[in-house]
Image 1 (cartoon, rainbow, N blue to C red):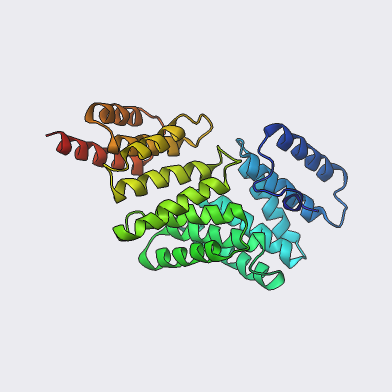
Image 2: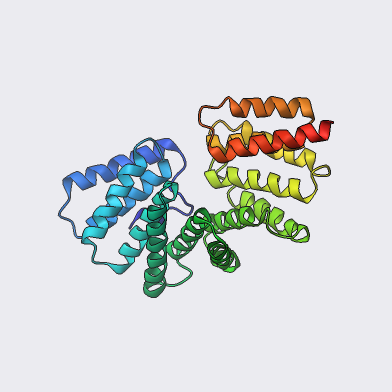
Length: 298
């Protein structure tokens, strides 16, 4: 049985000790029983574990495993799962051609899994969410509308896996933060809050942390003065989380600055600008927040 069948939650076990132990066993299996009929499932299990661990080099190794599976796979269901896994790894690419390819992979994965199993399957939901995230990254009105529909489909399905339902809630909320009418924003605050409940056992998971960041941004647009204390509390929980993604920490600092008193806000912006990994979009946001603060303090 592949690893997802063994674990009630996703990704695979969060404790590094357990992950390392199981990864070691999978690697040993690949070295000693390459002749087995289910070698593709073993490769898939290892790839999923590597993605769950996410240490330097893990994504590269996982991508190689997914590619190996796709070269010789005979099971349509395994092919669909490998396509979804490969598409997810390609989200980090900044090459338009690769993003386009990944969208196609995710779409194919969803079609295969839906046909072979059902739309309630874990990997169908994964393919839908990954496709939506890729479409959001690609941008454009039609792509964003399709992404929203894909997210909503996973959210509305009562049988959706909790991990991907929460991931869809976070993705949709981010998509709607600055486009939805003010009167609709409470819905996305609720989505972010629900996502945090669903991911409560994974306090450092990327989407658990992102749910807090997005909730703070929706609250700020909804009513910055009224929601300032709640926004600051959410941002502080991200900033103080030593295992949080660095980009999300920088984003939380800027969100906190947006509702803080001028002196504290400018100090936070200075910290963000001092970062050696500051992405362009956060540099632009830092500039916008600083200008807004200076206007308020006049």
